[in-house]
Length: 56
Image 1: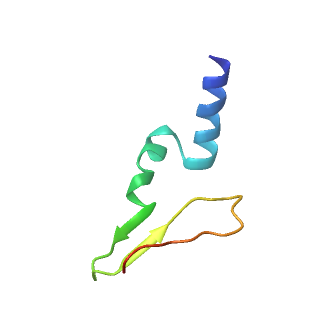
Image 2: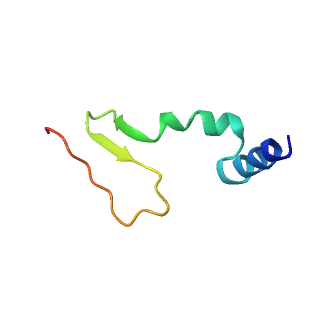
């Protein structure tokens, strides 16, 4: 239970709480904007490089 409480505390400090963390899908990943443009946002704090591949 102590580990669980520690994780909840980390979520509170870093993400604004568990509820806010569970809504992160609304801002991360590929999002279509009102003008039909696409925005890609990813959380990768230790990454040295990121690559986006596909047919565009």
